[in-house]
Length: 108
Image: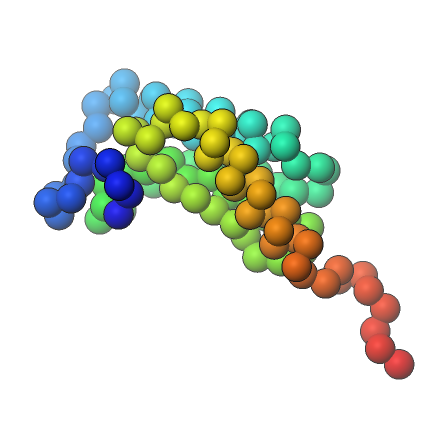
């Protein structure tokens, strides 16, 4: 659960169409900023998803090596877009750095 998300009572919060558009737009903004922070080879995408916790925007990064790094955020957290992008980019860069290249020669 996110610290200031309004779904602490177990009920999913319904968003208006305008709120969904805003969440989608902010997710795209975080993805675009994340893309700017990373070199070529990192694939970045965003989507709006519904879960038992409510509606969230999710930004995911597939580094050139390693596992996908993703983060979700609610409408109440969208004022932190630049900070979110930096955290996601840092996580993806760390994942790529800690994963041996697929093109490393095999041991002999």
